[in-house]
Every structure is written in structure tokens, then in C-alpha cells.
Length: 188
Image 1 (spheres, rainbow, N blue to C red):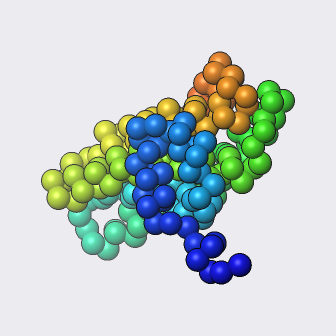
Image 2: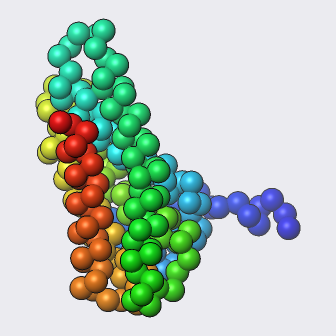
Image 3: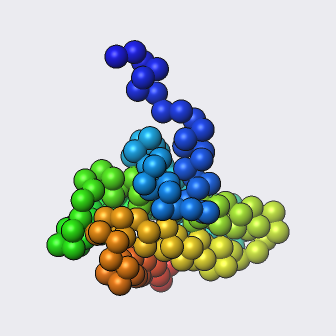
């Protein structure tokens, strides 16, 4: 097998990232397996990293000796967005199995990582507004991005459990609540 046979086309990753915003079902059905799981977790990792960094910057007092806190928050967000989202995908996958789950766990990890594409965009815009305008943005942009990710997450869970909408909404609500509760605990 030639090296080009295994290479992932760059357009499929970009198309998948933008497609999650407009038509997540098509992305999950047609393009998801063309995007490596590591790329999907990088997307969610960056989204949460910027979200947690915004939180750290929101409470940052301007003393550059205290810059460690925002940077530590960003690193924690990166960990939550990669390992936490991977674990969350595994939990959702396990909960979907009794309802006719047909996808492997790797599919679930890819789908959950990519579902946070809206959070990546919101967090990026929030970080820009925080740094350039001095706004406190973790609630307005970070939390909003995580909430916008629930739509693609519901679609992914529906794909995992045989198109059962009610079950998908419940599982996605639990998953979203866990991610926001973790953030709220860390912020305290």
C-alpha cells in the first residue's frame, strides 16, 4: 500500500470541521472515518483549552507574575478537551449499546471530538475578544460554545443508538451537564 493511500485528504478534515456546524449528520455518516481520532481530539482539546484559558484570563488581575493561573487553566482545559472528551465518548458509547449501538468506540471518540467544532469557533472568538477588548468572555463565548456542541453531540449519539432521539437527548444532556459541571467545579 502506497503512502498516499493512507493519507487523509486535507479538504476532508476542513470540510468535516465546517460541516459539523451546518450538517453534522452528513459528516458523521460520510466523512467521519476520514478524520483521524487524534485530529478530532485536538479539535475538542483546543476548544476546551481556549475556554479554560478565557476563564483564567477573566480572573487575571494584570500582575504578570500571576500569569501562571491562566496558563494552568488553559493546560487543564486541554486535558479536559482531550482525555475528558475521549472518556465522555466512551461513556456515551456504552450507554448507547443497549439501544442498538452499531458503531465502534473509535467512531464515538471521533464524533465527540468533532462535535466540539462549534465550541472551538466560539472559544477562539472569545479569546480574541478577551485579549483585544479586555472583555470577560468565558461565560458569553466558552459556555455558549459548549452548549452549541450539544446539537452535533445529539446527532452523533442518534447515529450510535439506532436513531432514538429521546435517548440521544437524555445522554447528550447528561454529557453536556458533566462537562459544564466539571468547569464550574474548577472555577470555584
